[in-house]
Length: 108
Image (tube, rainbow, N blue to C red; front, top):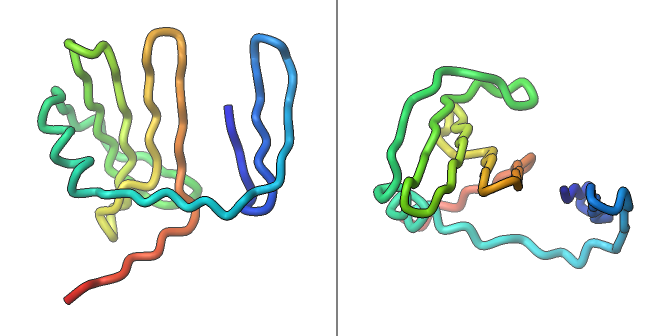
């Protein structure tokens, strides 16, 4: 599991029971939501309902790939329709990626 406050990154290794800490280098992922949506067309999608992520009301969608044996739970902000949290389950591993601050730039 990995967590960051924007200044420090903590990585927890559950198998060794250790936590490592390192300085955040300012990496900001370049997320291409168009490509993400295109990739989801290969998954079986199911509306799971509505839930909250840190007080934000979200649509919850599950995406499953029988071929890849991957399940992704996507939390989509009901107001902006932007995905703010992803839970990816593959074999015995669960990865959670959650966005706390999202900046959207329009290129009109």
